Length: 283
Ligand code: ACO
Ligand code: ZN
Image (cartoon, rainbow, N blue to C red; front, side):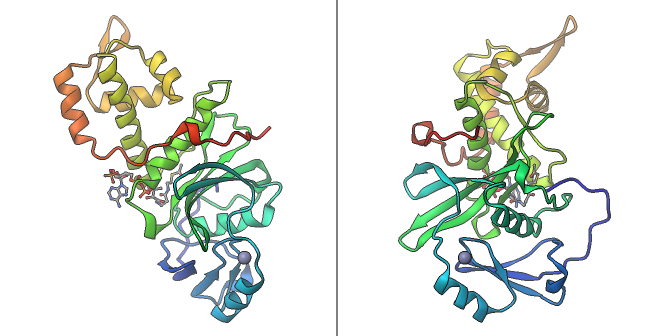
């Protein structure tokens, strides 16, 4: 999905059925013209094929043999699994995911070149299969060093810490690679996207500052976290932890101020357990 300058189109699909949820949509999504007369769409929760009628979905579920997203399982911890889907190898799945995601993402237009993207699909797994809770996408080669293009937690799963988990995962995955690249999310961020990123950055940076008693540079913070220096500076400036001395930004982390911020920063969210990464990186 890409930024667009057009006006936001009128919402077309009102609700979707996905797994055991009926979900009210938020925004327009450019489904193919044959779906123009549809208010409700029925998605196969595994292959993301969408249909106009419930009976079609029921027939589909009898013959669909997927029980999890296509692609490699690259993380498993308890009932939580992450699948890496290559848009080139699973084009239709990638496109269906984009149609679905656009229903909840404003300020993005559908980008049809799913070939160029990897999709990281987070699932809650039980004996019926792996149920998608959200995902993020990532360009295989980003010139702007974006490590995340789009992020979504499906509405029934929001405010449970999955968004922060997805953000932390995108950084942990980056860090576990040898290049040690820093990254940043594609702009613009939605209000909820900015809130989630600000929350994640704040938490991560405050924890490190507390451990190092503030004796650390922005560059070192960036190397440790894979967070881009500009994002670190903006986060610390918002927390009033930066002073400008002799032409340089310096971190001034008074322990009392850190504690006050840490209390206000709220829940840490679900932890990414790096030892649970199943190592099959895209080449
Ligand atoms: N109201 C107020 N604050 C919120 C809300 C809300 N509705 N939702 C999230 N937040 C803030 C909170 O600070 C929250 O932390 P807290 O619960 O500890 O207070 C923090 O964001 C993250 O909460 P999570 O539970 O970890 O995140 P969630 O699973 O809800 O997912 C996400 C966040 C992905 C942004 C979700 O809201 C979503 O999918 N929104 C629609 C799509 C979207 O806007 N995506 C981002 C676009 S920008 C981009 O893709 C680069
Ligand atoms: Zn299916």
